Image 1: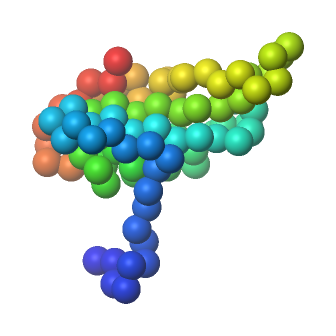
Image 2: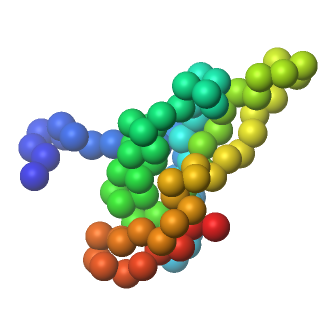
Length: 91
């Protein structure tokens, strides 16, 4: 489907545990600016790497300038169909 390394996607973090793969992606923008394209990107990473969970890291808007929060996107909290039709629940 993807020739000559075109179309390859990689998140910021991929766990080594292939049985319960987790991916995370850093978003260098406020949570208010994270939208559908960002959610779909994490879903694409999850399908690409057969991940069981997907997370975002994003900068917190507040007094602490460099704080990062770990967030599970709301759209990923629902049961989704995995590429091999196994249901996948995102906690």
